[in-house]
Image 1 (cartoon, rainbow, N blue to C red):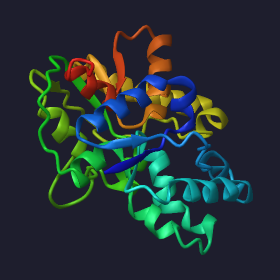
Image 2 (image 1 turned 120 degrees about the vertical axis):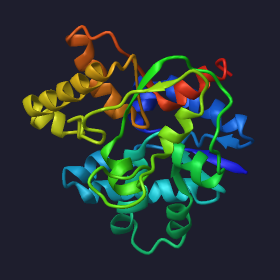
Image 3 (image 1 turned 180 degrees about the vertical axis):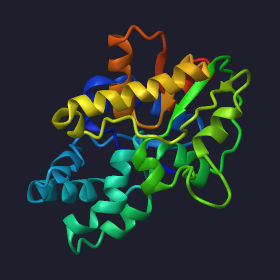
Length: 249
């Protein structure tokens, strides 16, 4: 299968190793990965602050660039949710949008739902705490919410638990927001920082040594707070965890 690699702006600019890890992981499972160099921001920051007219050309460009791939995969629940759940109001009647919407996936979601992977053969002998990003949880449903009734599931956790030697931290508040929220972290800095520190404290009391998530934006926020507070906790995108578990290949 040919997979179009969708790399969010902040990954491209600040965490390129996450994009590289995503490529390695997809190729390990047989995907032919193509990175369209013409891709730009998906438009989420503009749409989130009400500049929807400015987000329209970015959304339409994304649809044009990615329409012909078998699948589109991105290492970010937030940006993938923007495409799947919010592009309809921006792109109008573009014929290709329905195809793009249906075949765009967050990385763990793609591994779990499309490739139907349940076990990974790697080794990661560390205690890992999972931060469940709000968009992936609430809008993509990559895990069940703590307040809902029914069968509990967590696609990322299922994949992580299959790694040899890993321990998963048991948190008091498994799906609480980290406080980042994009521009919220700027406009409401004090509240955002307090929420992030609450998240880190939950992980500290649970014994987390490696903090992971499917959203590098959340991890960027938490890692910054951890550095300021001298918290000894390694922060890794889940793609980096999987690749390290496979020996870096």
